[in-house]
Image (cartoon, rainbow, N blue to C red; front, side, top):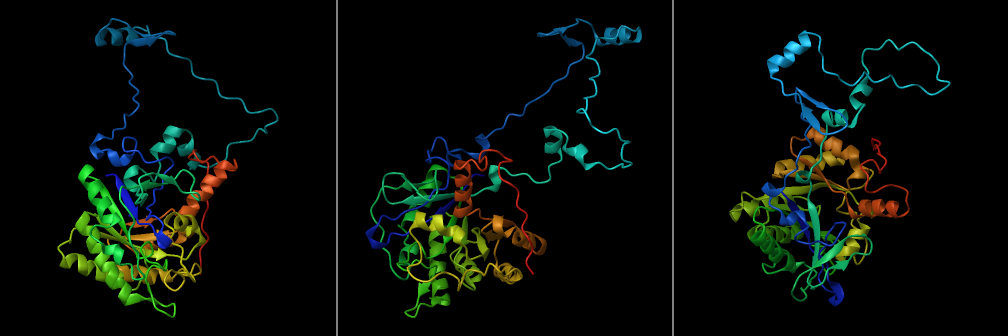
Length: 386
C-alpha cells in the first residue's frame, strides 16, 4: 500500500500554520503515489522468449515451416541449424603477467558478474511498499518551497490560521489541520495507509516536544496526557499508524491504553524508539518553524554517544505495546538499526531526516555525487560504539 506521514507545522507570531512535504517535485495528485490505488500499480517485466525452429538473419525472425519431428530428424541426419560461433576469449591488456589460476573453488565474484546475476542474488530489496512519504502542509492555498530542502514544498490547504498555546492544545483539535487532512485523504484514497506524527512541538509556542515549566524543565507525565488526546484525535480521523516522536518516558503504553479505551485497537503505534539529538533536524525545523524558542532537546532526545541505551528504550517500547520501532536519524546510526534488528522481533524502521536529504541535494548541485544514480552515494559503514 502507498503510505504517507503527516507532520504539522508551527505558526508562532501569527505565521501561517504549515505542513511539510518531502519530495523532489510539487505534489500533484495525478503524479503522486498517493493518487494511485495499490492494485493499479503494475510493473511489466521484460521477457525473453526463445522458440525452436526459428532463425534470425539480420532481420525479422523467420520460421522454418517444419514440425518438431522433422526438425529432430534433420539434426540426427547432421543438418544442424546454424548458430552463432562461440565468442572469442577477451584479450587482456598488453603487459598483463601470465600466471596460473589460483587454486580456489569459491569465487564470490561469479555472482556479481552481470546486472542480471546481481539482481538474482540481491539479499535486500527496497520498493515503494517499504517507504513512508512525509508531507508538509500549511493552512494557505499555495504550495510554497522549503528553502533548506530543495525540491520540497509546503502543500497548501484552504482555511485560516490555527491557534497555538504553550500546552499544545491544538494538537488534539478534531477540526485541526491534521485531522482535516487525514479525513480529506481517506475520503479520496480509502486504501492509503496514513502515519501521523504525535508530538507537541508544531503546536507549542515554545517549540519543544512537551509542556515547558517556568524553569525550563520539560514536563513528562503532563505532556504524555496531551499526547494521548492527540493520538486519539488522529485515530478518530482515520490514521492507521500513530507515531510518537516526542521521546517522553512511558508515552507508548499510555497511548496504547488511550487508543484501546476508545475502541481503536486496530491502530498501530510506530514508536520513535531511538531518536538521537542531532543537527540533521535543522532543515525540517525550518520547514515547520518549530525550532525551540530556548535551549535544546537534549533532556529528552538521546545522547549520540550512547549505544546500549537504545536497548533500554527498545525493551520499554516493546513492553508498552509498540508495533514498530524507529531509529532517527538513519544513516549516522546504522549500528543502532543493526542493534535493534538483532534484539527485537518487531519491524525496524529508519528515518532519513531532512539534513541527510539536504546533504544529498547539495552534493548533487556541487557535482560531488550523482544523486539520481543508485551508485551515486558512497556507502558508509557505521563504526560501532562501546
